Each structure stands twice: as C-alpha cells, then as structure tokens.
Image (tube, helix red, strand yellow):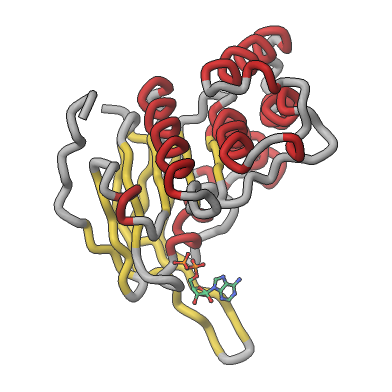
Length: 237
Ligand code: ADP
C-alpha cells in the first residue's frame, strides 16, 4: 500500500494573550492511498486545525506530518505552495469560487497555481470532462452567481480534484446545503474519490455523512478516538 498521509505525535497550540491554547495533543494516524476517513468531534475540538495541518496551511508545534512520504512542512514557502497545489485538493463549507471567472476558469485555477508545466490543452479537456461528469457541462461559461449552491459545491469539488491530488481534504463540504442537495454532493465526492484514488478526509459534524465513510476518527480534548470501522453499504444500496 502507498502511504498518503502520516501524523506522528502531532501537537498544535496557538499562543494567545491568556497563554497557549493547546488544540491537538500528540495525534498519530496513517492514511493509505485510496482510503477515506471522517473526522468528527464537538465544535472547538480541533477538527479544522487537523485539516489545516494536513493541508500544510498550518505548521505543527511538535511531531511530524508526512504527505506521500514527504516532510512537506519543511519545504521553503514557494515550493510548499506549489506542492500544496499539486498534491492537495481542498473543499470548504463555502465554495470560494472567484465571482469574476467562469466555472471553467475557476476549475482550471489550481492547474496554473501548481506550475507543473502540464499541457494547458490537456488540463482544459479534463476540466470540461469533469464538469460534464458532475452535470455542469452546460454551465462551463457561466459565473458562480448564476449557479445554485449545490452546483457551486460540485464545481468546487471538481476544482479540488483537477490536479489529481494524492490527498483530498474537505471541511464540512455539505454544511451549507439542504439535506437532499447535501446527499447528492456527498455521492459525488465519494464517487470522484473512488475514481481518482486519492486519500480522502472529511471533517463533518454530520453523522449521516460520517457514517458513509469506512473509517472514522473522533476528536476529544485534542486527542483521537478511532471509532470502530463500519462497512460501506454495498453498491446499489
Ligand atoms: P473545530 O473545527 O473542531 O470546531 P477548530 O480546529 O476550529 O475546531 O478550533 C479548535 C480550537 O482552537 C478552538 O478552541 C479555537 O478557538 C482554537 N483556535 C483555532 N485557531 C486559533 C488561532 N489562530 N488562535 C487561537 N486559537 C485558535
């Protein structure tokens, strides 16, 4: 198996005027390529912090994080930004699509940011195929304001997988959607994750979404509790 992500005794604290706030206290886990895991826990338990650390947007106070075997946090900032664009796909509760760009342009932004010299024609072809695949084929030239919340979140997912990241990280990806749309967006996320073979982490307070992932970690007081893995429902269920 190929290792996608490894946390070893990772701690994170934030300095504040009232002293250091210890958010994570020595967390260890390993995620293989193709694996999917939910991170749950009460509000303020450090779920977003864990995701931001995995995304290299934050640096651990102690311990080590490896992404695809690489100690990415040790890279200089410029290289780290390119690494992040190539290897990590991010989906947040808000779609963060840029309003002045079309859906196609939005989805292509990470291919520019990755600076990997890939053929632009190939990237556009893949972007169009993925947008078609998620039911937005007729919307490629529309701007985000012309789309519904669910459509925007589908485009945000396409943008997150456009560079075939080894790690797909989602923070409350269905948090702003009604139940039906949330279900459809979760379907899409799991389908694309399966096809792309990235490792997937979904931070969510939705037990319904968490129960759809084969592995679950629960954060309590800055420490992890790994829930008993539940089998995925068989296809077609
Ligand atoms: P969750 O996603 O589970 O709600 P977070 O990871 O957002 O939790 O936050 C965990 C804790 O860390 C909270 O108590 C929060 O106030 C604190 N925290 C997060 N970011 C900072 C920061 N930059 N400075 C100080 N405290 C922070």
